[in-house]
Image (cartoon, rainbow over all chains, first blue to last red; front, side):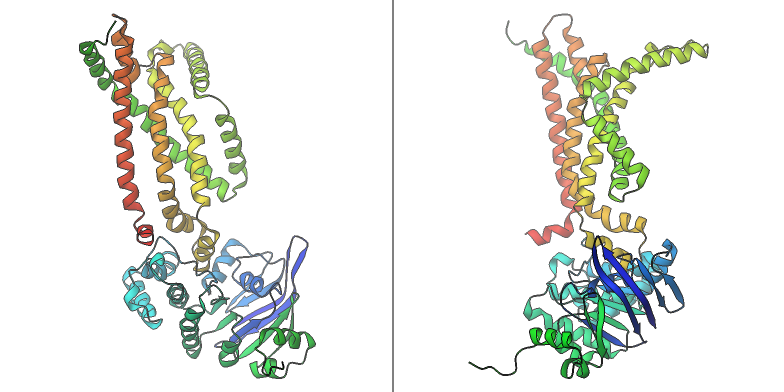
Length: 250
Length: 236
C-alpha cells in the first residue's frame, strides 16, 4: 500500500502541487487524469524522487519518508519498491531488450545473472517480445520499446508501477498493443498508478479515477462516477473538452 | 641548393629513431588527460560542488594560454625549484640531470586535461536526461548509472574527438624542441646541424608525423565501428 500525505512542489514561482493526498491499496489501478499543467506527472515523479517534493510524506510498504528530509538511502529504498514506465520509453540505448530488463535486477538488486535472465526472458515473453530479446532499442518500434519499458518495470516486481503517459508519444496505431499489455498487467493485480489521456482505458481498467486540476485533487471515485456523473463543474468542463461528442448538431 | 635525397634518408632514419619519444609524450598526455579530464568532466556534469568549480577554473585558465608558454613556464619554474630544493637537501643531483622529456610530458598533460575534460563533458551531456531517470527508476545508484549507462553511451560519442586530440598531441609534442628535448622533430634537426640541410630534415619529420597520424586515424575508425554497434543498425 502507498500513502502520500500533503505533498507540495514548486518550480520557481510556479506552485505545481498544492497539498495532494493519495492512497493506493494493493492491487488497485489508479488512473490520474486532468488538463496539462495540473501536476499529475509531477506527482508521479515525486513518488520515486525523480523530483524532490518540497513538503509532505510518503509511505510505501514499511518505509515512511518525509520528502524533504529523505536521505540518499531512503530515496534508494523507495526507488527499489517502485518502477516507472516513461512517456519516451527511456530504454537504455546501449543495451539489448534483455539487457534493459535485467539491469535493475543484476546491478541494483544483485540478483544472480542466470536467475535474472530467466526472470527477464519470462517477462519479455509476457509482453509478447520473446523474439526481440537481442534487439537494441534503435531496432524496435515505439510500441515495442514501450512494451520493453513495461517488462523492465514488471521484472523488478515492485510494490507499485508508475505509468507516466505511456502512450502519449506513440503513433496512434501502436497505442493498442501497449494498452493491451497494460490491461494484462492490471489483471494480475499489480498495483498501478497511471497518468494517461486514454479515457477508454481508464473507464475499462481503473479501480479508481482521480481528477486533478491546478495542483489539487478536484474529484475522485469509481470511473463510472467520474466520467458519467461528475460532481464538480471543473471535472465536467474537462470531460466535455476531452471526450468525443455524442451528438452533433449542424 | 637542391633536395639531398641521401641526407633526407638519414634525417628520416633519425626521425624514426626518436619516434618513441614523441609517442611517449603524446600517449602519456592522452592517458593523463583521459583519467583526470574524466574526473573533472564528471564533477561538472554531476555538479559536485568544490570539484566542479575547480574544474571550471582549471579549464578556463589552461585554455587561454598557448601551449608553448605553459611549457616554458613549467620548464623555468621546475628547473629553478628543483635546484633550490636539491640544494636545500644537500643533494648533488641538479635539474640538468633530469630528462626534459618529463617536463614536456607534464606540460602536454596539463594542456590535454583541459581539452579532454571539455570534450568529455560534451559527450556526457549528449546522453539524454531520460537515461539517468530510467537508471534511477530501476534502482541504480549515481555511480552505477555513470558506469553502466552513461559512459558506455558517451565514450563512443567522444571517440572521434579523442582521436583528434591524440593527433593534436602528436603534433603539439613537437614544441618539446623548444626546451631542447630530443623527440622526433629534434632528432631530425640535430642530424642537420652539421650540414645545414634543414629543409630535408623538416620534410623527413613531416613525413613521419603524417604517417603516425594516419595510423591513429585508421585505428580510431576501427574502434569506433566496434563501440557503436548498437547505433549502426539504426543508420543503415
